[in-house]
Length: 140
Image (cartoon, rainbow, N blue to C red; front, top):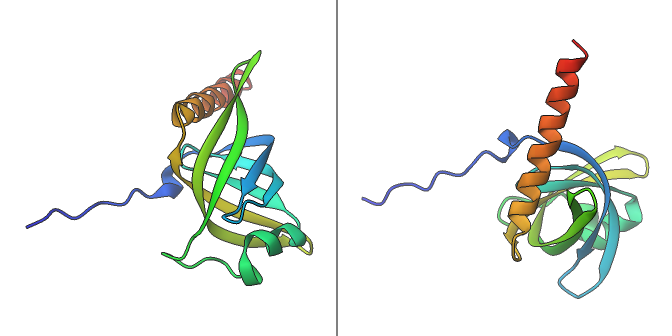
């Protein structure tokens, strides 16, 4: 009997608030620049306006499981304060939520990283989590 594959609960990944831009490339080669609101080791949440959603999500309908929208992402993370590195990752749009009249959040799940992309994100997220923990300790 073949063992069942266990899917990781992606919501268990700790997210960190990040302010940076991300370039999203659609399958037709069209590129859009969006604003990152949070980042985890497995994905990114972006904030955008309705016009951007129309370009990224056909019909502005949230993708259903198994019918994700494939994209490529490109953004930078500061591995060292003076040395930002570019992370390139294939990804899927898996979530869409309206926040305000012309503000939406799009959830993007990474599927494959180029080069050391995952390691860069892993280190960056770990550092931000450690920094926030240290700040919390200092205020108590």
